[in-house]
Image (cartoon, rainbow, N blue to C red; front, side, top):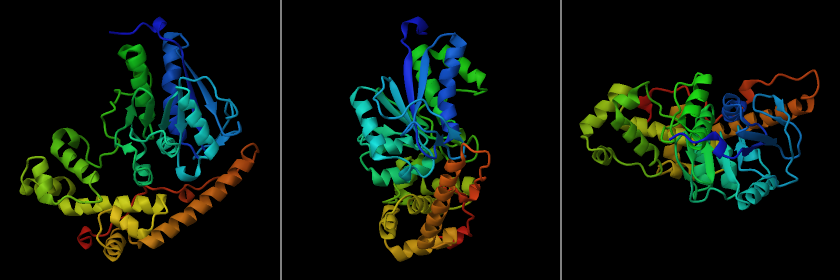
Length: 368
């Protein structure tokens, strides 16, 4: 039954912008509530932006965005959402964590979009709770904060927490919130305004590396890959994988050969190496610990497999990424200095650190 708009009080939502936040995620979160007000001709939602000191915050694309308030006061809010972006482990402060904890203690619902859930985890606000975070940040979050239940869903909404992955996933999360508060008719109308064909649910996965429509045609393949992704530290052997979803090992091998042109073991290995690549770039974990976390029995074996897969040994991969981070931060500081001037130095995307960059693979037969 559709809720009466007049019976629902105005929601006050705050957005804490972190350095290097993702502009697309912020827009995807604010525009649905703006459109809710526009379509109903009512002030259903109010949004307020915050930064550490009230100064403009520079997004990952180099645009400086002005905000409404600093963190000197604890505002009256219904929800506060942390807007994260790239290089998240270096983009927040202890005072921001303290501020978020005080809001939470005051009964404010806390949330995070893109990589914002990482900051909530750092504040201790996601222990023993499910959350959604951009997939390129998931490995770091899982290893650094093991008490957090990190899923691979587009978004997760509970009574006092709301988190989503990046890109346009915040749009779906906010539409879901609007639907619960004001009914499906309004949510559908907002979706139509944005040419968004449907409101994706919180059960939808944010990243399934498959061909289009395979999720419908081959649900068992989805189950298999999910099992693999959830068991990287202690890989499951192929016979057990097949038994879990009630198919034969031969059927299992045929599925992977048909859709990925490789064996299940090679696909599994690729998942483990991709996780290792994320940990090398996102964390300071020793290489031996990364090898163990990704299911390798020895560091030499891990190094050989990694080198065969990426063309770089693990140590070089980490060094190259640190150079990129240093270049990016230097460029970011220069951009911030010039953000109010007429001449700003263009920022090269090649300097931006990425944990999900495309890897040009070598022959898979070399990965054993």
